[in-house]
Amino acid sequence: MHPFKDFISAYVPLSNEDWHEIEAKIIREVVNKDALILKEGSVCRHLYFLETGLLRFFRLKDGEEITKFFTLEPYLFTSQKSFSDRIPAAESIQAIEESIIWKMTYEDANALLKLPAWNTFIRKIVQEVQYYTEQLLIEMQSETAEDRYKTMLQRSPQLVQRIPLKYLASYLGIAPQSLSRIRKSLTQ
Image (cartoon, rainbow, N blue to C red; front, side, top):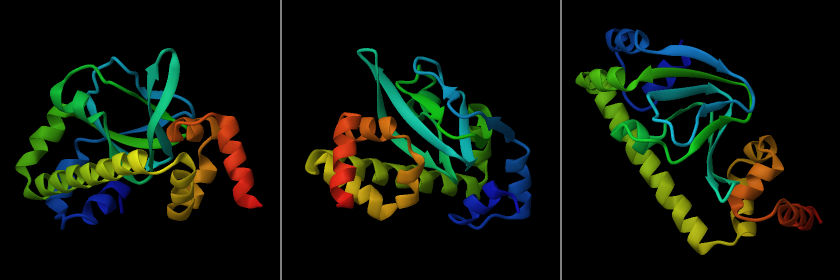
């Protein structure tokens, strides 16, 4: 079965007819490691599904890259505000591993909203992302970098192993040397 069909079916029942309409709108792309899928300041014109790989969302601030979050396969992703409002993106999206993505245009994603299953799926994904974003904000405001790192280790140790140290440190808001000290103290 197609990995995107499997992903959608985990959220909503999906008929073969609906799937065929969705499948006709998606294009497969292999993205090289370190390649940008979206550059900050460009308008995001696609809704994407990450079949395999790992992505990093980041912004430039005073010439320094600040990692906002990561997306691990399988998941849907886009620059939400840029995609929805057709405005320049406030972040870049980078593949930090070779990745397989499927993409559909803004027009196609909206045309599919006539399908009740797609409409419900999109609504559930938006709610899930909102919840995840709220949790991230709470953690950032109430936990130390060390606590957030420990939480990441508990939730998804395999993810922590896949993220380069400099990106993980940036995400936690600390210098790579500080993250090295935290890692060292946790192994002792």
